[in-house]
Image (cartoon, rainbow, N blue to C red; front, top):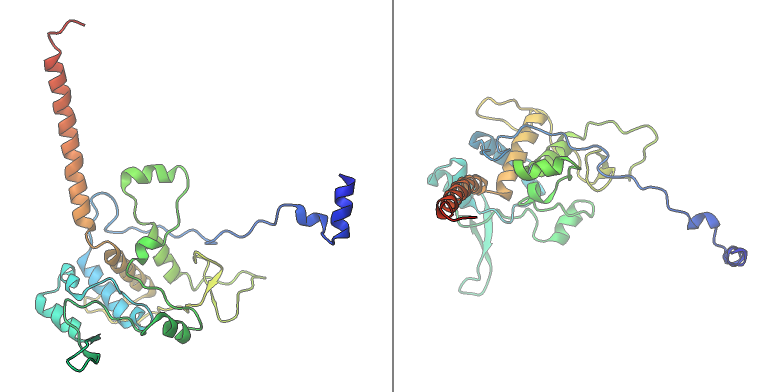
Length: 277
């Protein structure tokens, strides 16, 4: 043993380096704040008014940097918009089409069958315009992000169909920029402290929301908290637009299974009632 230690010392390897490394910080530094969502639970549904407000927040704020590549304009009919309103909304965007008869690409107003166009032509352009970090697509963000809950909560989550981990994270991140930087804490230059960020102490995205930034037509509060709730609900819908149908089908299946089990039990009793055991 002494000979091994001597060899390591001669090689310039500190003995302390063989010990376990210091525990790395666990992210996020703060667990997401759990919120009450209309779509929570096995009977949850979307609030169409909230989804429409969330769409407005996305359009006026988030769409400057983030894309919705997997969302077609025609699906906005599920938010309560008429066919004419969907066509008018789509026409506000310009998409690239082609090639034409001359073999050239051209631009035209979007139609309901088109998808939300990205704000940048490619990932490299997006990164160059945002300090080297390309803003992620938001189509599935509410399902792709989330902080797992520990034991025993995750056991109950199976039965309650808990799916709010992603929305809680997105909401907490959007409202977490006002948290003060702890004394002695250092963050990378050009980044912004947010204790709810899943991958570190800070992130490249600056605080995106501020009070009075978006005007609501229904009289809802024009605050950061309300904006964050509404756009988070909208992103949950973009990630799972058929959630309500899934839950209704799941409930019907559970009712069927209960009735079927009862019929099987009753049949078993009748078939074996006169058989000697």
